[in-house]
Every structure is written in C-alpha cells, then in structure tokens.
Length: 574
Image (cartoon, rainbow, N blue to C red; front, side, top):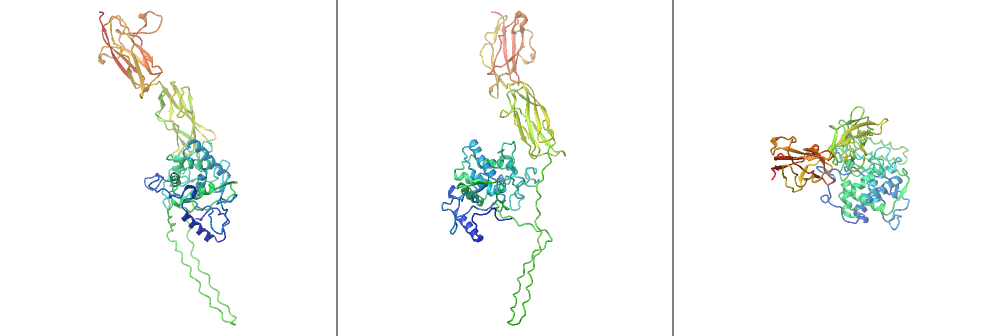
C-alpha cells in the first residue's frame, strides 16, 4: 500500500532524511501542546470501545488510517517563527464542503450537548487521517461521495474479525463488515450512532454532514467534556485503539487549531492507501499453491579490464535474472447497489389496540421486500396516523419516516392512545418507488380502564325498610397508581350476601332513582352506569329501599376489571 497521502509543506529533495527527522521528532514530542504532555489513558482506564472478545468494536473496527503528519519544525527549514501554518499551505487547506460539515456538526452539538464542547478542528483531524477529508473533497452537491469510501475487509487478517452485520447494505459485503464513508464507520456502529446531519431524512455514512455529526456524537459519549485531556484521549482511542493513532490525530488537531483555510472541493490530490494498522501488524498475503518462490538476483561478474593498446573491448555483462512474477492478490469488486424495494408486508399479529390514554403494546411494523421477495435494506417507509382518537406516535408526531435495516424491517415509534375511543389507521407507505406502495394497518382505542377501585367514604350501609341510606357511597379508580379519569363503571344491586346467590340484579330491595320527571316508582333501577371524573372519583346516587328486609350486595366494577363489593343491610322499621 502507498505510504502516505497528500504532500508535505516545503518537502525537500532529501526526503528520506526529512522523514527520519520527522518521525524522530514525533517520538520525542508526545502529545502536542494544545492538549498537554501527559500520556494517553491506559486501556484499563478507557471505557470499552471494541477490542476483541466481549467488547464492542471501535468506530472503525481498527481499520488502517493515513499516517502522514503536518509539517514539523527543524533546522534549515523556512518555517514561520510562530509555528503557525503558512496561509494557503496545502496541508492546512480543507475542502469547502467538508469544512462546512465539520463546523455545522460543532454548532449542532453545542446546542444539543453543550457539556461536550467538541471542536470542529478535532473532527477535521479525524477526517484527515480517516479519509483525507473525503478524498480531498470529492463530493456531490449534497455532500455525498460519488462512490463509497471503503476500508479493508475485516476478516481477521491483520485487522479485526467482524462478521457481516448489515447484509451488505452499507459496505456491499455480506460476509464481513468494512469501515464506510469519510469518517470510516463500521456498519454496526453506524446503526447506533448514525445521524442525519443535512436534514434530508436519511442517515448516510457516505454523506460528510451525516458522518461528521455522527463522529461528534460518538466522541461526546459517556458524558465526556472534550476540553478535559483524559476525556479527549478516551474519545479518540474509542475511534481507533492505537497510541500511534492517538498521536497522529492530536498532531493534526493541534495543527488545525493554529490555522486552517478553505480550499475548493476536489482541488487537493486524493490520498493514497492508508497505512496505519491500529497497532497491529498485517499478516502477509497468502501465496497460492504451486506459485514458485522468487529466486534471488545473482550479482553480475566484474568485467575484466582491457589491456592497454589491445583494441579489444570487454564482453558485455549479462543482464541480471528477473524473478518470476508473483500472483497479485485478488482485487475487491466495487459494491453493487442492492435492488430496490417493491412491496411491503405487514408484520403485525392482529389489530392494534390500547385503552385511551395508554401506550399501545405493539408497534406498527412492516418488512420491505424486493421483487424476489428478499428483504430490502435502506428502504424508506413513512408511517402516517389517521382517525379522530387523538392518538400520536411517541413524541407527539402523527407522521414519521423510518429506514429499514438489513432484515428489511421498519418499526414505527410506540403509539400513545388518545383520550377518545374509536378506530384508527396507520398507513405505511414505501417511498422512493414510481408508484408508492401503501399498507393500511387498522387499530382501535378502547375505553379507558382502571386496575384498582377503593371506597373512600365512611357511610354506614344499614337502613330501615322504606327509607333512604344515609349519605352517598364514594369510590376512587386508579391505573398504575395514578388517577384514572373517564373510566366507565357499572353499579349493580345483587340479592343475598353470598356470591352463590347469583350476579344478576335483584328484583327487590335497595334501588337507585334515575333522573327524570316521571313518578319515582317508574324511575327505580338496580343497575346503572357511571363515569369517573377528572380525578378518578366516582360518587354514587342515593340508595333507597322498598319494604323488603335482608342482606344485599352492591357490586361496582370498572372497565379494566377493578371491582368493589359492598354489603347492604335493610332492617325492619324501628
């Protein structure tokens, strides 16, 4: 692989000596002055960022990175005395769109996570060593690379061994993962940290705005403050667990803090292949069986000098033998664009239903499929709520767009039932097709429920025949410990004190009076329906008695199954 990317400022002809001096200076200098001189935190001090074994992989899967360094100072160099990068130097130039993405990511995170204080210069340093600022700013008008920037196959040969996690949706590889995009996210890390930085409704690792915001969000994880040196080092090492990587990023970070300028997109040369290996030594490329080993070149025999006046000339020296060519390693084919989705399949097991004011137990879910009925990754599905129930998705929206994963599944956010019972529909629409495909998922908001009902008054439930019980019975309904307003309840007078006497309304004994202008005898009822008030309270009407004496039961039951059974006694008149 090519050694370095870009050109170093004022590189002289004696490149070997300069490179040796640069590496010596790097080894001696440690961390740049902008972040202090203390060594980086040890692995034991860092939060898990993805080593082999049980830890999660780092952002890049410890893929290679570009090891070129900013210009170093030295004797005989025409460097500015204040060590500030020369205005207009190639090394301090950052492509316009890339620089805009870094700065917008900084501004966005300053608003959403002000504690972190991530500087755009740090994002620029990482973008420099990961992709040379998106191959020198080769981007379309939306900030997306024309072709994916892919790291090596993470198959354990020299690098991490990470089996495929995205079905090839991001990296085109269905066997192993590869780091993707200007900030080199492996697919499984992108699934957790991917962001929509340009507001187009997508999270694309190949878009510099999305990738820069995602990188900044990752660096801010674990409640970090990046002005604290230990947090800064932990964040960078989480990106690629290598002390060499840490030093390289810190040098560029320090360099950009001293000055950087905008250059036109695509005006810089694209970087060569990266060389950093995250501290690992890549294994040699395997040799195919039967391939002859190259023979060493024999040195040519010295030519015998001609005698003076001989007039003869020396015999020509035979050319050195050329070793047989070795078989080049197989090239990796560019990733193919997966076939688009053509249909949606409902993954629900029935109608969506929830009581008013509660969360639906099931989330609307569909699977996007291609024409061959295989799952379609990265398809856009829009969920829209219709109906008069007041139901919304979690967060209050009634329309959301979801991107399918490798299994083709798109799940809408949780549904929160509104306060009005009734039918609703969740429309799932497959976007990006010539004729959008829509599924209608039916749902229902049922009456609100209560899971507990308690009596709150102390009225004595004994009365003489032909009289009225003193006071009124009061109860309170709750759900999950909170007041349950709007819950329907049925109060029924039952004959006898024993449940064996039956659950049907009695035909004699205590009774309620319904409202109206009719005579009292016509308004008698032993079963009525009530609704709890805004505080979940239930106040029953007065109970009257006829001439029948004995023991009766009053059963009050709410929607949701909360029940209270009270004993009523009717005695002979005094």
